[in-house]
Length: 419
Image (cartoon, rainbow, N blue to C red; front, side):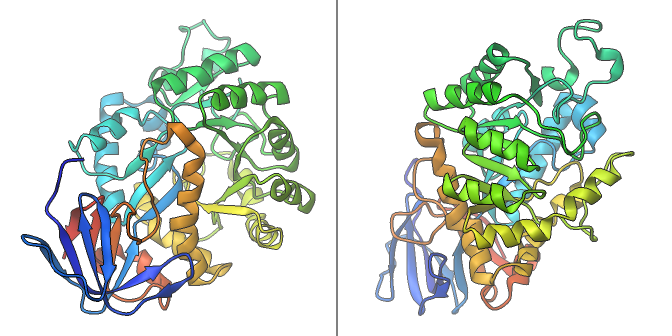
């Protein structure tokens, strides 16, 4: 990174997300994209930009561990059948809005986000850091199979469906095909792989209870990922799908609302991460395709129990939204985080969406596209910072109104919002 103008946040109270406390007023000096100094006695470097803190809280940028950069803000039909150029233009606009909500980093859980990431990293457009998974890998008839019936069997209307051609999904059956699909995504730049290991709500063919892929097929993806120094996460709700994934060496389970206590204990025993979303049947429910409402109802009924089991067994718990196909819901990203106060203290929520999610990102190992310390306001950490009009430890709902609550947002030393 080229040298940038230093920035000094004066008289701010730093949020320590490791311990859930705020410190006494201090100066925070940012230089060359990292936090250089935190001290009450820190001096303002010559030529520095000064941001008055006035005793407000300075916290780390937020991290969404299950985001779909290309699909959060477009309807399902557009995502699967629309013009790919339009899809990427919408995604670029949505990336800017994501950053302005205070989410400076996202783990993309599936979709053609490589070009968007490249444009953001090059400074062509504003947006969060993206840890891309590439195409979601699915078996035939699995959660990633959105082909219409006239496209089956494969080859009748062309070898690949539109969703595959644009890089949204990759349908692969059998160990050798899964190896190939996994290696393709790694070749394209995936920092981790995403497989569909069980039924889903949005998909048209699979009941929620079905187990997808065999253990050998899942292990093929795990082996391909491990050969590249990274890991596999899977979409799964049920005990059978999750137990098979754990045996195969999967490192992170996405969703899991229907898990039982035995399976959650198995995850904890094996150090498997659980990326859980606060799906509820409320005003923030995601759009459900026609005919799939019963699957959604079944899934959300398990949310309460899932969080209770995660706490009981002290599973390594991450947080993400999994917002799909709804720009209105995407705008409520911070509200979705604040909703987890139903199960956690504000300090626990803030820890999970910053330093804990940052720990999950390090599973990418050598494939980590952004080496450096994320998720904390500490000397030497990447300068992803939010100056908050208030203290989120006292009022977590500040996260739900970033347009008024966040006075300054900084990503790697660059101020992207100041009001």
